[in-house]
Length: 111
Length: 171
Length: 152
Image (cartoon, rainbow over the protein chains, first blue to last red):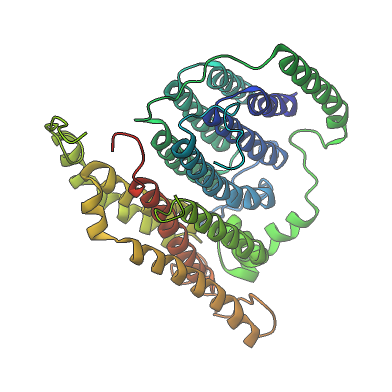
């Protein structure tokens, strides 16, 4: 089933967030989780033999796919870019202060 | 629907490569491949708006990620977590997939959605708003409040990133 | 650190990249403006166009170095444009109070498939384009201007 393949992609990202020690790998894992969630929303909206929800000038289109989840995902994609930029800014600051990306060594609360 | 399965398998393979490989630059390139596959999948699922946005956002995300890792001296982390952590996490992930399989049966079948509200939007979208792109009429006329919320979140995230990257500070 | 050997291409990238950049950034900017203005007729809209416009300025910064890009669009101008986009969006929404409720589509909706139709939707697209484009350009400018321990 196709929903299950989408959830397998989510689980690959989740495994990366939990078990990796490198900070940049954790950010990559968060990115993969975001891709899987957006794909799940668009999969729910699909209609068999449907057409894109845009009217044409000389055709009468009967069956269109669902436009509401597409509107949701449109803003979610741009928000995920801003959140990734924020995470990378914090990671660069952490590297400046501690000299490494390893999360096992970034344990001092007061530098 | 054979092309959908092929695209999803390609994305899963690229994601596994991105997670497991040691060199950081190669894993960033693999994440770029996942994003491009996602853009083609959006085109196959008849969503051209989303394909355009996903493609350009993917390019910008790659630029930002590469800025963080290039020219740094020490980027690789040797060693892995303890074995017990990997074992427990794999157990939880398998449990999650088994429970998800039994609850995905309650969703409507793939390709036959229940469009209660969307039928009204599709039928009278042109008459009430005058726009022929129905996705734009949904995000800027029928559900414009959500777009206002999204603009606020974008503003807050950008201000947060610029505040972290200031040069003045205590040390 | 004071007697580093001077590299041959000190600022920006090689000659091939600079030539292609000079030819294409005007076209990229124009394409982004086209996608924003035709947001209610064909796929695209404010978000896609805003990101494409930000990409054209970032292309200039990557190929020529940050001084050239700062001369075209400095940091204060970028933050001014972002706030301007947010204020225009909010004022379009509040002006709907004149007719009845928040976000009322109060301009007249012309005929279908014309450029000046669909009420407030083209104006809202332009406001979103300013906000997203200037914001993403400002974030990347902040990442580049930060002097770190790398070989900058």
